[in-house]
Image 1 (cartoon, rainbow, N blue to C red):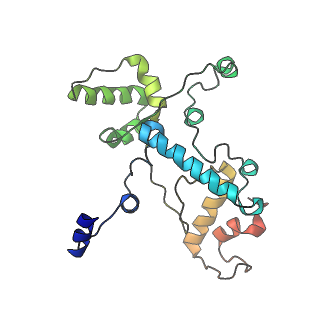
Image 2: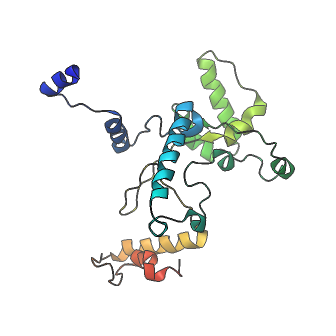
Image 3: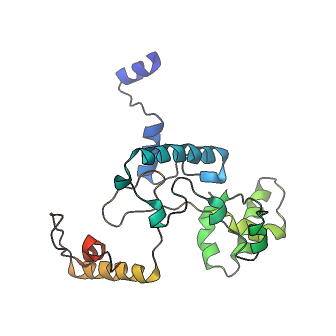
Length: 228
């Protein structure tokens, strides 16, 4: 404390883990360990701790003031089920699934410099073989043994890529926020409404009970829940 006090007196700005996390978020770069998930022990432990905190906070709220995840169809509201997300069986091993004999899948993070070649993988007709070649190239540069060709499919299916999610309008998602996928029909409705607003302009309304004045607001207005 004496050391930090001297620093502050000299005009230095002191930041801790929370400030470091906020700085990473503002810069748009991953923050360790919360953005590394199950790809490392520290990330898995952070997810476990965060799940316990979020579940305890959710249980303290009355039923009428907390989201009902069972109704929303959220299978894993507290901790991501990576084994289900990275299911490499593709419905072929139903007997193994029924007997609960499937092996745990260990995902890995596609980081720099491999992530720089992501456009090449997307455009390639054989992304599995290309990814294996890239991994073996970087391993050989670091005097590491090359991976066998039989690992190409597993390497491709268990790779995770960090992405940046930006809000289209307003909103501030918290840590471990849940992202719901949209059906194709609902997605088209949102895109069409957004396109009309961009072409003809939009007018926000200030009162909560006022009638929407833009196409995108009409889509998300509570009066049009049936339409969505």
